[in-house]
Length: 207
Image (tube, rainbow, N blue to C red):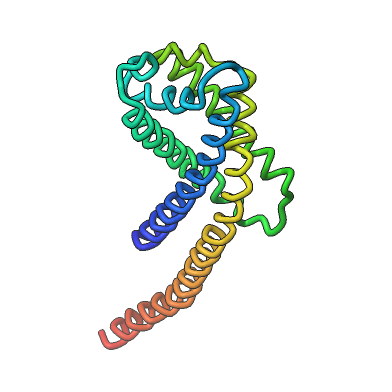
């Protein structure tokens, strides 16, 4: 039983690491979308990077208190760390869906986009409202669309492929091990009981 728990924990860790990598890829799509669309509403292309950096540096990241180099490095680190974390969480949540042999692009895209919307709501209106109120200055509609289509969409599609490659074989192997253990227990159990009864009978006869 303990070996089964270790096996399942190891499988979950591997899937979380692979999904974190998928999250980084999806985070790259989101970052590109943010930077390209920032000038549309009059902001500089560096504004999304400043917003990410402000999580670690505070509001000074938005007011010119730090050099552009520092802003870019810190902003990228924060952004991709969050993207990897959210990707790992999504991969673990979706792990048991790897048993489904068939799926549709629209379904995976929809689940990913829904997850992206949940991240947007959590980041901006729970964490942001409590700790980083300047997050609320960003356009809600724009950010919702970017998180859904720029992060959630690629995450859902790519993460599904990752769970099918890693999660499904792990689950099948785990199930095979459990069935083998059950067969061994079923075979050895009655034999041991019969041997025990025979030994007890021989003792009584000899006595």
